[in-house]
Image (cartoon, rainbow, N blue to C red):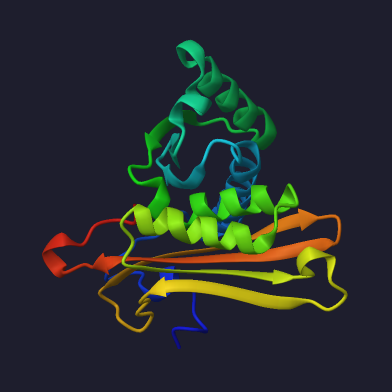
Length: 218
């Protein structure tokens, strides 16, 4: 099962929580859910160079709060907060948001242990046509130096422009996917190259978490 289920979804409840926190009536639930999906896609594209990890969405009766987790908060905030204000205006204009919008920006404490941040750097390198083996080894070394107990990186597709697609995997340490106490971060992303898309997957094992220490995904 550990190889068939997203490790984050598999641990919802005992370790992680949903990244959206709101309640809605049936007639507007689908609309708000779609807006959440589009918001995440928009922010992922806009902040791809800022070490974007995730966004938490919280809705109230007349307010919308977005908490952006990023490895480079200064890149988003800008000089005197101008960047954050511009981003807020873009969000309001694109999604026609009438509620009071609050933008919180939090720094990722350990970017080397964040699967989305590591995967994004791999995607950038692959799109620059850097050899995929060097990209895989560099990502593993970064996570190992960052304090990961285990990690696995995978890239699949027409590697180096080969006619036949294949999958290459590198790993170190252990990744206990079946252990619900194991704090495992996972993400899957895509790199657009001249030969087509390459799939990139990253697993990071940060250690075991017990009941008294369980907290939201970092």
